[in-house]
Image (cartoon, rainbow, N blue to C red; front, side, top):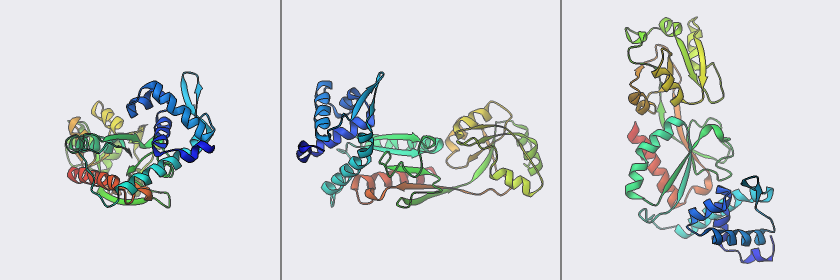
Length: 304
């Protein structure tokens, strides 16, 4: 940094954080409720402070420089800690809280949070914004560390060493078919299940899963005709075909009900689904983060 950086205030770091989030002077100005010229002047001050262009033009878009990418996570961590210092010991005034919380979640959990959490926040914390990110786009071990999300709400199988992980609920998998499907005519047997055509859900395109292992244990094999990246897309396909799918019983219930699907208990034992909440330890004591984690717990507890 140059000499000017010694006098840089937190407002300038906040502006830098928003600029790097948005990669757009106009979008950053809207988010900070500034005019575009004022945002451009702020960017100029940031460039002087860091002795770096920070954002450069690439075609019609703006992209961060390597220096900007290197400092972004550190800037977020510093801003998080500064907010915690000012707020320590005090209760969160949710009616006046203006903060954006970013959550990485599966599609079904995003639907649950959107339908159960957002209406509550509109009443109690109208200034709060929630961004729900697809889990498939983000590396599990970096998204929290780099400050690109406040929470993960999903199956957290291999967290980074520093990640705080809290088990929220244990879900079970059920067999899902359209209303009137032949499998609904009588008791579901392993042989009948194996004889149907299946759709599987995998964001990595895997065609084999726990159900295949359970069928193989009794000498059976199923035919999987397609793999889709989300439960939502798979359940929509099930609703319009004779394909058989799998879904979590509790977190999948809203979409299963909306699509009019039949959920059948599996005739074979399947491993449970453990849904956890993960966060970076820098958020351990931040009052706003503590409050938001409790809102997420409540939304999922109500759901089950």
